Image (cartoon, rainbow, N blue to C red; front, side):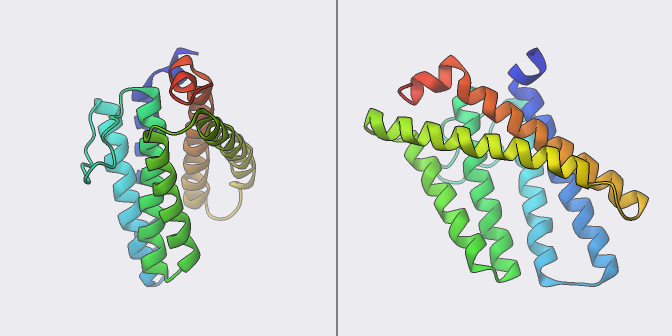
Length: 189
C-alpha cells in the first residue's frame, strides 16, 4: 500500500504517461504530419514536466496561481492533476481544432480552482463525490485500455500497454487520495 501512498510514485507514473505521449507523437509524425500531433507533443511534454516536478517534490510548472497548493500533499496533487489535465485538453483542442476538448479543459481548470476556494460544505461534498466517481471511471477505463492494448505492431503494443498501465495506476492513486483523511477533511467529508 505504501507505493500508492507515496506522491513521488504518482510523479513517476505521470512522467511515464507524458513520455509515452511524446514518443507516440514523434512516431505518428513519421507516418504523416498532422497539426494535432503538435498538441499531443506539447501535452506530453507538459505532463512529463509535471510528473518530474511531482517526483522531485516541487512544482515545475508555475503558471500564475494554478499550482499554489503544491504537489507534495495529496490534496495539492489532486488539484494540480485536475488543472494540468485541463491545460493539456486545451492545448490538444487548439491544435486539433476540437472545441469540445477546449471546453472540457476550461471546465477542469475551473473545477480545480473551485476545489481551492472556501466553498460551502455541501458544494465541497458534491465536488468530492463527483471526483470519486470520475476517478473510479478512470480506473475502469484504465483496465479496459490495458486489455485493449494488445493489437497492432509490437512497438505500438508496448507504448499502449505502458500508457494504459500508467494511467490505471494514476487513477487508482487519485481514487485512494480522495479517500485519505487529508483530502476528505479539505473537502468537508
